[in-house]
Length: 229
Image (tube, rainbow, N blue to C red; front, side, top):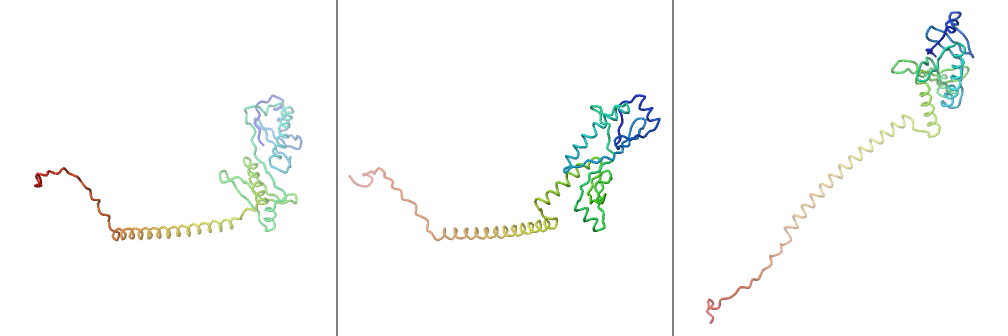
């Protein structure tokens, strides 16, 4: 970790001039004119990423306060982000993927596509197969994603990529068959419609049209014109 202290009095500079490296609680601190670097051998263990992060936070804040008092400096200040994490790693111990890679005499390495930093590896440390995430800004989030996927595999047995490919291919074939059936049905309906039109026209020719009703109209008769007196 790299820390740019906010304020320091002459005591800090006196300590730095006497020897720019000190050890505190198994952490090695290198003192510079405006910054200090901490190389820590601390390990925080837990059964979940959130728990490990919580334990680490509860350790580091009191440690920084202790370091401030020892060196007569100010590191933590509200509204100032002066702590930069340079190296970190999360390890999933007894990981099956890491074990398989070791058995095959292989080692998995994945680099970040943006900054090129190493992001994930498989390792065999302290006689343990470990899957490790190492990116300073993404390690915690990466391990959360990995644990989520592993839990999904264990609990739900989702299909593999090959099985998914078969499912997608079958679905596409079914869609193609359905489209062909719909085309055949549409053509059949068009043929039936034409047949119905022909039948209607034939019926119009065969069935006689009804005669118009005769209308009677009574008119006033002029008997003289008829020769009747």
